[in-house]
Image 1 (cartoon, rainbow, N blue to C red):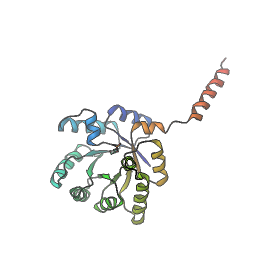
Image 2: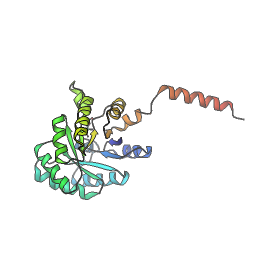
Image 3: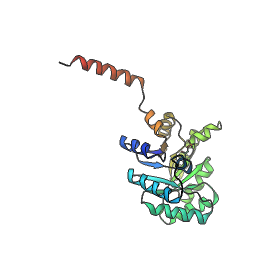
Image 4: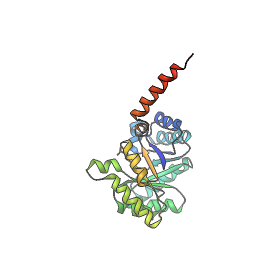
Length: 218
Ligand code: G3P
């Protein structure tokens, strides 16, 4: 399973990269805005900085919603770096754009996915990645992990090559559940990745080992 970090914050990306377990980065307009990035040049330069930090797939999201606009923006993003994956919303023109990009060899991440039907369409259009939003489904009292399960089963039935990239992860249990289900990728806030480290028995055990190690000092 690939681990992506879901942020546009360069310090957090660097921290995840330094762990040595990072396979890529996903961003979205909300995460970019959170970093105070303003204007097209600043956006493009920020993506370049992320590409310099991480040698893995970097999802950069278009903000156009019409076919021509998505293509124009997506091609510009894809030209930035070979690791850029163009993130396209699950709308009618988005699906047409994913097919266009796929035919041209430009990799895509279909985002804002909340149903198995949407997942089918994205795979048919040739999306490289599919981003179902677990947390946001849970937020409305549906079951985000069941959605991941359903999509993994459907993709398996037909050997679709689209990779299931579980997004909107809110806690470490989402990550381990995705691993059990067989999601190809999880994209997580850094704090959910770091939370995987935690276990009180590890802390207690280490404290005891270190205390005993002191007894061996000359
Ligand atoms: O980038 C998409 C996704 O991961 C957003 O997560 O927490 O805003 O629902 P969240």
